[in-house]
Image 1 (cartoon, helix red, strand yellow):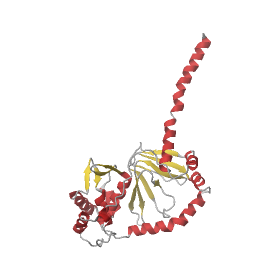
Image 2 (cartoon, one colour):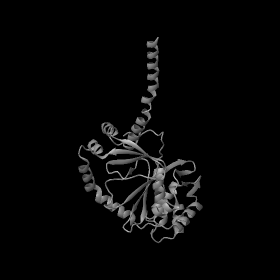
Image 3 (cartoon, one colour):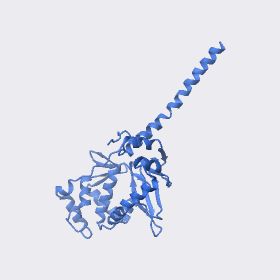
Image 4 (tube, helix red, strand yellow):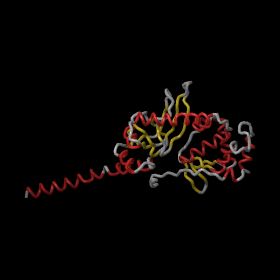
Length: 295
């Protein structure tokens, strides 16, 4: 009788232990999905080698993501605001990062530049050890890989960044370009337009555009009057084709962007030929349930 009781107790204990092994599956599946979604351009064998060394780290909204020179970090979900300190020790907003973007890009950061990454929503970050990444991609040590990338592309990216800052576009065109960029990362399209899934403060938006808050308020008001922008439940809803026209006016040769009256910009927006307004960037609509892209 005692033997049967001990055997029964052993079976009960085994049953109680079963869920513990299954509890690790969701995290494992989450890591597999994150690697497939963020690193979809890798070959299966490369992806497998990286996945074995990678892990996911979660950050609460309004928390800072600390620097980590030993890992490449890719944003899996959420939104991150990135800023830097310039030579005058002033903090300047650089960009917003969305799912799939690399956090703390190790290749093109200027020496001595302090960069700050702040999660503005609850976020998940995929951490990939740099040595595992380099060995899986090209089979060389990380320092060799990093030096090769910097030597090949560093000058080109520096020139592109400088050209972007000095291109002399009017504030309305810069604002349109910033909104289009954000729509490509955080836009969800419905019958009324493309809604940004994150809330953006006017302080941040004016810093990105490079204008004062007063000027930004005036420009947003003008966009609202013309139906290019609306606010619904605290989030912006954008008219992508008309924003595209505003962002392209100077490059399309219709006007000199530095001195054209604002009213003329909106007039050209309303009467733009198809060649200017028909090219619409398609916002990348991301969802937790969206299947990973496979190349």
